[in-house]
Image (cartoon, rainbow, N blue to C red; front, side, top):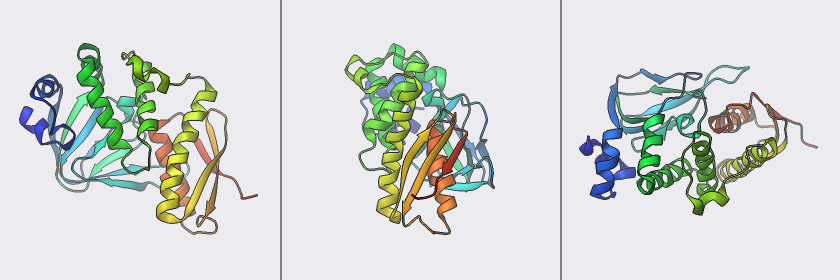
Amino acid sequence: MIGEVIRFPLFRDLSAADLKIIAPLFSVRTYNQDAIIFEQGELATCLYLLSKGEVFIRYKPYDGESIILNRIKPGGVFGWSAVLGNAVYSSSIVCSEPCEVLFISGPDLRQLLEEHPQTGRIILDRLARAVSSRWVNAHAQIKTMLNNGIVNNDFPLDPEEAHMTTNPAPSAKETQIRALLDQLNAYIEQYHGGSVEIVAFDGETLKVRLGGACLGCPLSPSTLHGWVEGTVRQFFPEVHVVEALPTE
């Protein structure tokens, strides 16, 4: 198993001692083309690392047809719900070609952080970098979310990172969602010329306002339910509805 772990980009420069600790916690599985690794709504049990092949993220909004949010290449990571402490996966993962994955269960990840906190913190930081790679300056915010998921599952929190966590009260949840939308807005603005901002959040319904090139664009529903709702629900599946309010 150490050989498979070493080949994965996140782990290539880890020390021999760290590799010896994490290798037994990972398993390898192969899938055929069109295989479904997990379905949206399925219990979130494992975090997956793609070592070969390609998968796509399929998301079904509550009021529409399924859409493809993104494609993941070798070196990518998916199944974040299992890290964030969410009960179920918020999207489906489908193999667009034969694939090989490494995966680690939630309990094994907890074990890693409890018994080997220094190695666990290295892995946590790298996971944060992997999930934030698409957004400018998102690393700290994503790491905050990962830390919150760890706290919710009784993971030990590094005292030096305690200032990054927030109270799980609704106001703190809104603050987290606002920060995530800020990062997503930077991405939409950079690559599409549009914008998104939060208007209100009541615990279940998130109201946003689209702007810029998104106004009048025939693809704005895809932006809303794909990029915005799909991304938010990957981190906050308790958000049941995402609505776009008209521009004032």
